[in-house]
Amino acid sequence: MNRDSNEVPTRVRRQRPTVVVIIFALTVVALVTVDYLYALSVTVPGAFAGTALLFALLLATRPRQSWTQRISFAALLVAVAIVIRLVNWTPVKPFLKDLYTIRPGMTEADVNRIMGRYVRGTGWPASINGDSSRELRVPNTVVFRPTGSPGDSNWGMVQFQDGRVLKVDFSPD
Image (cartoon, rainbow, N blue to C red; front, side, top):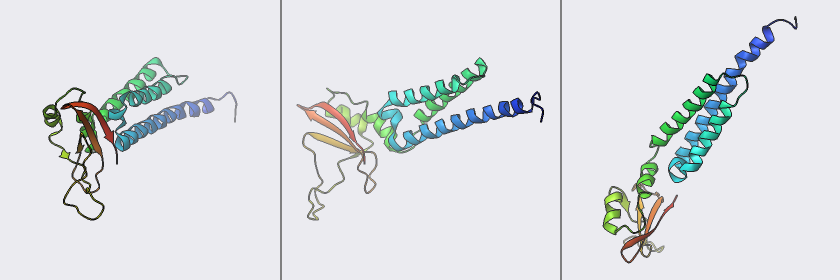
C-alpha cells in the first residue's frame, strides 16, 4: 500500500460523520431517558437545558468540521431538546407543569382551579390495621396525584397556612 495514496484519509473522513451521528444519537437517547424517567425538563429545567447545550457544544467543537456543520448539529440538538421538553411522556410531566405554576400566597380555590383535573388525596389508608374507610391525610396540606392508578404515590403537596399556599413540593414514587 502506498503511503501517498488517498485511501486512508478518505476512510478517516468517511468515519467522522459516523462518530458525530453516534454522539448525537446517544445524546438524544440520554435526554429522552432522563426526561421520561425523571421529567428533568420540568423538575430541573436548567440542568436539562445545560446538558443539551453541553452536548451541542461538544458536537460543535469537533475539529475539521465546517462552521455550517458545527452550527447545524448544535441547532439540531437544541431543537430536539425543545421537542423533548414539549412531549408529555407520562401523566407526571403535565402534572408537574401544573403543580409548579402554584405560587406561595395563592388561595385554596386558586390551587383547585389549577389542579382540579388531578386526583386529590394520598390514596393510602389512614390505618395499617386494614381499615381502608379513611384515607391518610397530611396536616395543613392538600395532596394531589397525577392518576388514580393503584400504587401511584407521586404526590404533589401543597402546604397551606392561614388559608394561603405556604409551600409546594413534589414527592415522587
